[in-house]
Amino acid sequence: MNPGDAWEAAGELARASAEMAAAAVQPVAFGQLGPSVRGNARNLDLLLDVEIPISVEVGRAQMSLEEVLKLVPGSVVALDKKAEEPVDLRVNGKLVARGEVVLVDDTYGLRITQIVDASGRIESLR
Image (cartoon, rainbow, N blue to C red):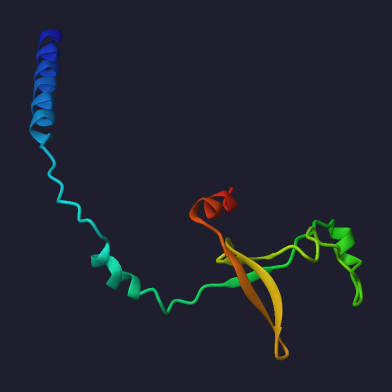
């Protein structure tokens, strides 16, 4: 193959490439957006019986491994919250509400005093 043939083949390849790229471009048509999400409500119904972990966080502490290994029955771990501060309700590890611990019969419970708004939930992820 001589150099002229190589240049001609390269030119044909470039033209064919440009034609394919032009042929592949097509306008996109999107459907009309509806005013409500009611159509997806039945999809949400599929998730209503899914169990997710819920926890109540009274406080946190940071300890070295050495300190943890020294814990025995009766040890006291100081937490980062005061007794009068609300505790956090976490769903799947994400903060969703705050409240106060209550005693119902012989069982602990949580009286919710504040639902965290969407911006607060987003902030808790940081």
